[in-house]
Length: 175
Image (tube, rainbow, N blue to C red; front, side, top):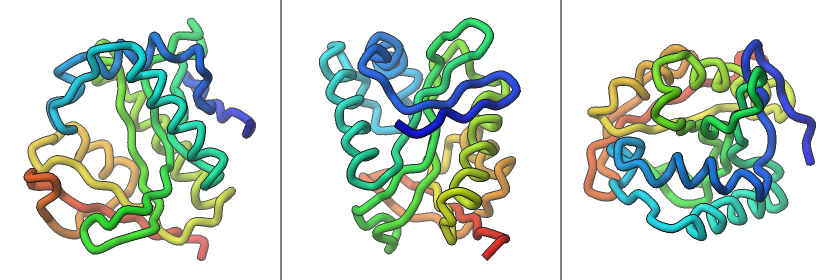
């Protein structure tokens, strides 16, 4: 396991199998899925499978989404992090993407931005990634605002799975 990252309020760490209940709380909420396919999970086994797939990404690519935990209470509040994407999205393939998803009661508190800044730093300074990409539903103003706070800039709009998406990028200033 990689060493966790600590921010002012958060502990960012690789997923554990014991994160299944928090992951289920997150992904069973239809509001969380409003802009990400509108397919909330209905059984905790789906969350367990998702965690297993993320853990396989750690082995295959050396990175994947990490659990976000409130340091003060040790509470799982969502996930964030860098993922290596092998699919072709917006004419890009084999790229690093930053993403996040949080349990609804933790929205609007700056956690996504706080975690995201730590992962941008990790990607550029530890992993030496040349560029980070991200995409969001065009109507998801909250997510778009977070990407812009992280320093990513809008590149273009495109269609993905029947939805209009917006593409962002951030180049490593150290390379």
